Length: 417
Image 1 (cartoon, rainbow, N blue to C red):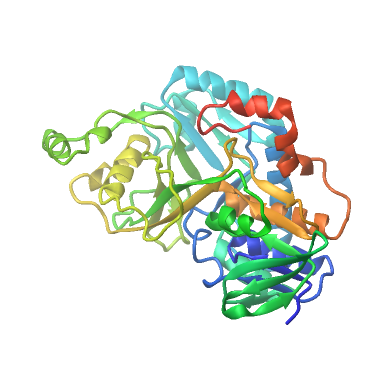
Image 2: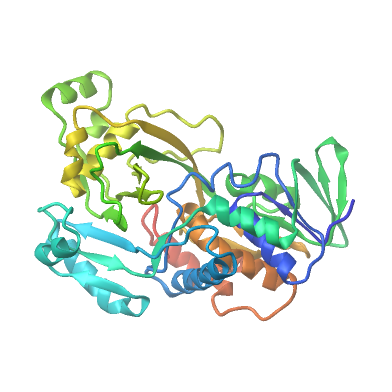
């Protein structure tokens, strides 16, 4: 068996990379994964995108990715339902609002509407809590169906998908010559791409590289909003403040008894959600990473039976109309996966030390939005075409720069360079 390139991992990053390799003229591109495409982590997010990033390399990567998404939406007759509703960052803290105002000036070229008071915010978004003092609406943002995008990419590119596990990478003279699969199947290929998502580090060791990544558990909950309380035309809504959940006395007593005391104090910022589906849908998707769990990827994920209730209460802080569900939670569906990331939360995209070997991963919670440009960047490396200006910001070579390493040391634990 032979292939022009083998991509290990059938998540959105792997599928996008295979798509771009094929479009760059590489024949017989193959994606290898023991699971069906886009079923491990790529479908476990809110499937959103934005160009609103606080540093130039990430903003450039995301803008390129959105350019590609727009092109593919036209080419596919919008097979993956790309929308442009934006992200609405909301705050009840005047100091945080001042920082938003600074961002609106410094990052204004990325496109956003700044609401400098609660009244102007609620004129546009009347469902937002009266406690909000303002917000920022990033406009080049929205969401789409990652599964339908991936399915379209596979269908139009002619990329082959093989259900198997990569167990080895063969080399001669320091370059890739083949890939070994379970059951001792061998594929002759000059190009191997590690796009293994949560297994990025494990697959990296097959080519003798220790990738600087770790994984965090993340969950997502969908609610059937049978009362129609969440606005169907809302953008992605993000509460940017820490908050204390308004538990009842009985709930507080029960949480104390059950060891849930960590849910009683101040909770982290970032509770967010959006409507899911078309105008006739009743589903709301929401996430809140209030309990950071770092571990080697394994399944099933750690259980959190309180997750739906905690997230709904968090969303109610921002959208008070949801309080009607306080005593009777709507039907929830919880799933999840892993955010695999670097210390500075910047992805790894580019060549490895072995000729013909590449990596695309550590896409953290932004894999769906970054995958188009990340896959294209790998294809540019593999076909030796001109690289964009942001390319070096995502390569492993950055860890040889002492200035960059010093910046990482100055970061908070989950910082973003």
